[in-house]
Amino acid sequence: MAPERISDAEHAVMEVLWQRAPLTATEVADALADAREWSLQTVKTLLSRLTNKGAVSYDQDGRRYLYSPILAREDYIGDESRRLVDRLFGGRAAPLIAHLAEQQKFTAEDLAEIERLIGELKS
Amino acid sequence: MAPERISDAEHAVMEVLWQRAPLTATEVADALADAREWSLQTVKTLLSRLTNKGAVSYDQDGRRYLYSPILAREDYIGDESRRLVDRLFGGRAAPLIAHLAEQQKFTAEDLAEIERLIGELKS
DNA sequence: TCGGACCGATTACACCCGTAGTCGTATCTC
DNA sequence: GAGATACGACTACGGGTGTAATCGGTCCGA
Image (cartoon, rainbow over all chains, first blue to last red; front, side):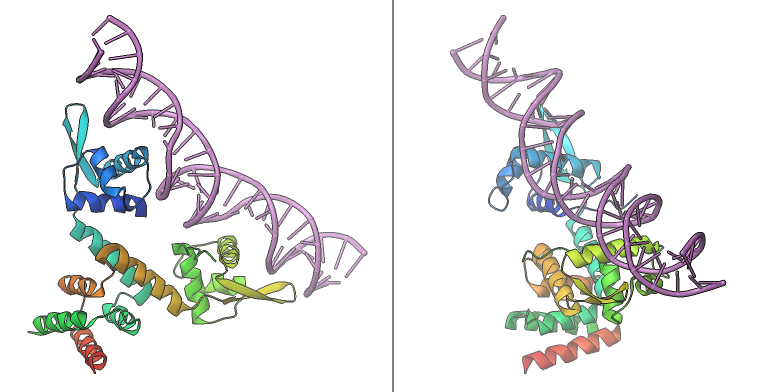
């Protein structure tokens, strides 16, 4: 299948569905109300585009739809992360980490966590 | 100023200019010939859009332009990395690393490198 | 039973993006 | 000095995106 790209706005909708599903369009819109000032219609358009892209499905419940994600969040963040690493760091992850490190993106807990991860990977 | 987003195609042009500058439009097109099958006109359009976005500047050399980056590569990859971390990992970098780790994106050298980085940061 | 209310579907529209073609002009060549 | 050439500027155009309004059908309340 063609890996249909998911836009920023669409991604916001996916995040809601990944958190809990199935949901009606209205419920999705409510969940987004804090973050984005979208009309219900806008959310419905995004749901419909996501459906066309094969990223969400729906079950009909009377005259409304209950939407659920098809695309797994794991897969999405995997693809996006890989894209970034490929585009900006020649496909190698270490330079990304070096970069994040220089930006002071790490808290003490982060460092401990990462050390633990590295330790695991080495064994 | 609004941080004008740089598109994928535009980014490819920036990479050339980051590698060496100043360059003429034709030189940029030549440098890209291997990677992308773009006509010279396409490259010129991209350079012009990047100029409008304030990401590159030019010096006039007779009747042609010598283009140079204004936006620093550091800043660009910083912004892009931060965008990704914010969008997908709630602004924390450790989960990104955990994710990359699970994808087996790290070679043995990477691991050594990262360990070294972490060691430095902890001190 | 009739007018809203509420659905999803369809349509709208301006802007960005990828990918160029064309135009007007300045320069080089003979 | 006239035609070819090379340059940047302007124009084009189909598809994606953000952001909705409108349409046609159905159900609910009075």
